[in-house]
Image 1: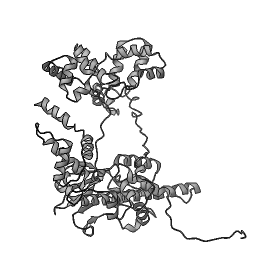
Image 2: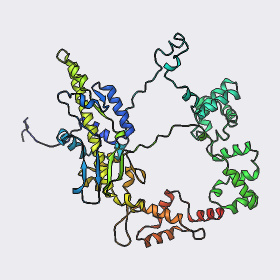
Image 3: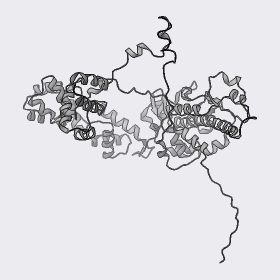
Amino acid sequence: MALSPRLELKQTQGLVMTPQLQQAIKLLQLSNIELEAYVAAEMERNPLLDWDDGNARDERADPPGTDREDTHGLSATTSPQPESQLDLREDAPAAGAVDTLDTDYENLYDGDSGADAAHTSEQPEQQGSLAGDSWANAGTEGRSGSFEQRDFNFDEMVGAEVSLRDHLIEQLHLATADSQQQLIGVQLIDSLDEAGYLREPLAELAARIGCTLMDAEAVLKILQQFEPTGVFARDLVECLALQLREQNRYDPAMQAMLDNLSLLAQRDRDALMRLCGVDAEDLSDMIAELRALNPKPGLTFGGAPVQPIIPDVFVQRANDGNWKVELNNATLPRVLVNAQYCASIDTRHAKPEERQYISECLSSANWLVKSLAQRARTILRVSSEIVKQQHGFFDHGVSHLKPLNLRTVAEAIDMHESTVSRVTANKYVATSRGIYEMKYFFTASIASSRGGDAHSAESVRHQIKSLIDAEAPDKILSDDKLVALLRAQGIDIARRTVAKYREAMRIPSSVQRRREKRLSA
C-alpha cells in the first residue's frame, strides 16, 4: 500500500480545561477564609475589580460586554416531597448569561476529586506600618494630639499574651550569662512543641546546633528548672517526675508508679499496690497527687489563636414547617467590575499592549464575578439536596441519620460526583442542632437484620454510645452484649465493627469500664 499525505476533517466533542474553567473549579472547593484571601489577591492584581459596598451597584453603569451576577439573598426551602416541588428561588439573572459555565462547571470530572481537596491558595501580602508622619510629628506638634495620630493601641500592647517562648527566653537570660549556653538554650526553646515537650532526640539537636552532647545535656538540666515546671521533658513520665521533684514527692513508690503508667490507665490497682509496695489508702493518695499535676505545662501560655468555624449555609425551620436553606452572605465576597474606572480609560490613544491588558483585565473580572455567583448557586443546590435527603436528622436527631453517598446527591441534582465532592469540602452547615461539616451527612450504610431500610454508620455509633452511657455499674456491657442489643433493634452488625466504633469514640473496653466504675463508686 502506497503511503501518501492527505487531509482529513473530523468532528469530535471534548472538554477543554481553559484557565477560566480551572479558576471556577478552584473557587468551588475553597473554604470561606481561603476564598476571601483569593479574591483579595485578585483585586490587588486586577484594577477593574472593586468591592461592592451595596450602594454603588445602582449608581454605576456597566461597560460594554459586562455581565453582572448577584448572589445576595440566595435561599431554598426543602421538604420531604419529590424534587419537582422543591422551591429554589434565586435573585440571579437569567441562566443564559452563564450557560457555558453551568454546562462545564457542574458536570466536569477532572481526575480524582479527593486529590483536589489538597490545594494551595494564594495568600494576600500583608502590609502594615505606622503612619508616615506619626513619628515625625511626635516632638514637633506639642503635647496634644501626637499620640492620637499613631496607628498602635496601648491597651493592646499592655494586654497582649506572653508566649511560652518569650517567657523561657527571659528566664534563660537570668539563669546564665554564658553566651554559648544562651545560644544552645535558644535552640532548645525553639525546638519545643506547644505542650512544652522536647520531642527531637537530644543527640540530633546537638548535632544540628554544632555542640557536644555533654554541653546540650548541661543546658537542658538548667532549662528543666524553669517555670512552668515540667517543660523540656522528653516524655510524659519525665514531665510528671519534674513536677514531683519540685514538690519533693518523688519517692521510690511514686517512681514505681510512673514506671507503670500503663497499669494506672487500665485501673489495675492490685498490680500497682504490689509494685509500689503501698496499701489501698496510700495508692489513692498517690493517684490524687498525679491527677493534680499538669501533663501539658506549655499550654498554660498563649498559643496560636483558635480560628472559629464560620458556617457557609444556614438551615432553619420555615413558617410552613419545612426547612429553609440560606447562604451565609457574610462569607460571600461581594465584588463587581469598577465601571467608572473602566469607562474613564481612553483606549483610543492607548498602545496595543495597553488595550490588550485592559481587555484581559475586563474579561478576567467578568469571569470571576460569574464564577463566584455560580459557586454560590452550586453550594445552595447541593446543601438543599442534603437537607432534603437527611430530613429525619433535622427533625429528630442523629438517630434518624440515613446512609448517603455522593452519587445519590449528584444524580438528584444532575451533577457529577466530583462537583459534589468539591462543594462539600471545607464547608459547614449551621443548624438548630449545631454546626456540622457537610461531609458529616455522608455516611456508610449498615444492613438491617429485619430486611428494612439500612442504618447509617453515624447513627449506629450514636446508639452504641447511648447504650454504654446508660449501663449500670454492676452490669457492664461487653461487645458481644452490645451486638445482641443492636440486633434486637434491627441493626445487623459484627462484633469487630462494634469494637472499631467503640475505639474510634475513645470508649474503654468493658474490663476498663468496670474498673472505672469501681473506683468512682
